[in-house]
Image (cartoon, rainbow, N blue to C red; front, side):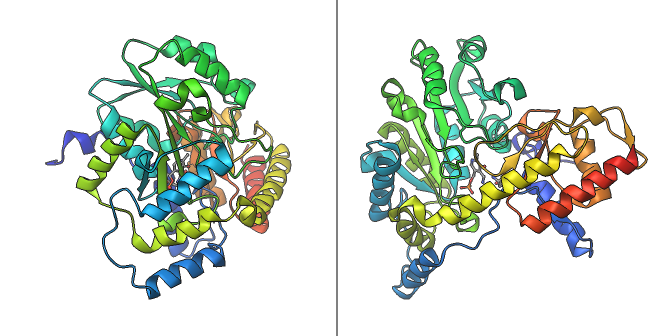
Length: 397
Ligand code: PMP
Ligand code: GLU
């Protein structure tokens, strides 16, 4: 008998984490799996950040931290918002959390009532829809495709708005498509939202620095949207600090206060050592981590070139983040290596089982025609993965 709550029974397992776990399991069985499923930089955390953590340990930073984060970390975040985004925040508007994932979970908990609709342009980051549902919200998916570079148009937004719309959540640069909304595109979206003053926006900018075209712009930079935009950011991606678990928000103070109350009952302040290290990371100019961005850019060129050689892969040209999101629907209805491919999940499973390449099905991101491939992997792994996929698909058909 299932004694679990309806809440948890209705929650899906994170597809990115599930695929990574499956790949790890196969690896433990001695299989030579290439993991292109998890969005995780394969670099080490930079030494200057690690040194700050070691110093913090030696200085006995070991007590509970303020729920909203150390005051000097909040100051570093304020300085970063001013330096990189020309945004002005007061300490009361900043909240540090255990990863941007917790920032998002806090926001959903404090903003959503049962039945409130949250517009999610598809493809969206895997956890948005379940975090929204867990908090009684109703995800409203807006389908986009490669023709608009997987970006929602103002008209599509307007069509999706109902009296129940409470929020819009999106990431730019986008996980999984790598698309970046330009200032002009965001102003177009904001123009629609100006007609609906009760709609709030989550602008997830965790890939801000992983941008190959330059010119990051955030929704909160539009004056009319500042008071109803929650900017989510963190250090996992740009500083290769996924396991350190630090994310943060810049938000209207009443929202930050509510998140503080929520977090104070659930987890308290984020890890003390990680917070000290992040002060050092954020106080440095982003150019300190440019070597990683340059390397991701090289890998992007490499993987796009290799995918062009694989029949049936239709990829967009990602401008940021470290994912490609090719449409592979060409293979639906075909039988490969004795396996019938009905959808993107079957296809991702085929790649894992027959080519030992782990990717993630697009279904998890609200797009059933695509798969997500992370190129946060070595050049050698990327080449080998593309070769295995190509061999499997040409042999299988
Ligand atoms: N938002 C997006 C778009 C992401 O890809 C991720 C991936 N980790 C997160 C939020 C959560 O990041 P964190 O590691 O800070 O929890
Ligand atoms: N954000 C990463 C991804 O999309 C990490 C996995 C996760 O947190 O779900 O792969």
